[in-house]
Amino acid sequence: MHQTPAQLPQLPKVAAFFDLDKTVVAKNSAFAVGREFINNGLISPVAALQLTLAQATYMIAGHTNEQMDSTRDQLTKMVTGWEVATVREIAEQTLKTVISPSIYTEAQELIRFHQNLGHDVIIISASVTELVAPIARELGVHHVVASELATKDGVYTGEVLFYAKGPAKAAEIRRLAEEFGYDLDRSFAYSDSATDIPMLEQVGNAVAVNPDRALRRHATIHGWEITTFKNPQPLFNIPTSREVGIGASAVAGAAALAAGGFWLFKNYRFKPTEQ
Image (cartoon, rainbow, N blue to C red):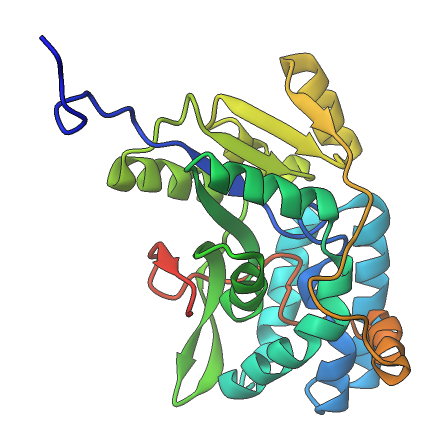
């Protein structure tokens, strides 16, 4: 008997989960906007120096679980009282001049590849939603799982509501699979860091992108694909010389919003980025 399209069995959906920092973007997204936080008086020069050292360590060797937790605790205190609107404004300002030139061409192409196959693409990052959402929007990705801080009267209270790291990412992937019917055995996950091994273990197609030493070793043992992204490509027009100067100096102010990946998902919900 011939079956109409409506009668044909529907295959479970496939998702592609992308870590952000050093996987899609060639740097830590929050560290990258640090200079603008200094310019707006949010970070003192002393704190900026401390965070610059943390950024240097991150870019060379990545962060261990302990380093991420330590940075989170340090910076949770720092951000208390920051205005959410100011952070969002700075994130938008630095998107084109600082973040966009650091987005890997290979990541952009891979995201489009998954979208063309009808896969749901999800950015799952330990950075704060206010920083992740604009990047995801410009990449054409409409779903974000990120970390957030609690807010009250338009300012950050310093309370950690959800820390999107390690097992928390894995738990969120399982929840999304149940809610949206993803077949995790057919789904994909991409990350650079051993801290994301719990996330990568949730899917049938785990890919180590520019992996740190521990992730490379784990991927090799378990037969995961290992790939290298090395061609950042701006999503926007080339910035002016003044803008380039801003971008180049951003490393001096490693951002307090990263907390080494400490951001919190305000209501622990899977939600689309704003259009």
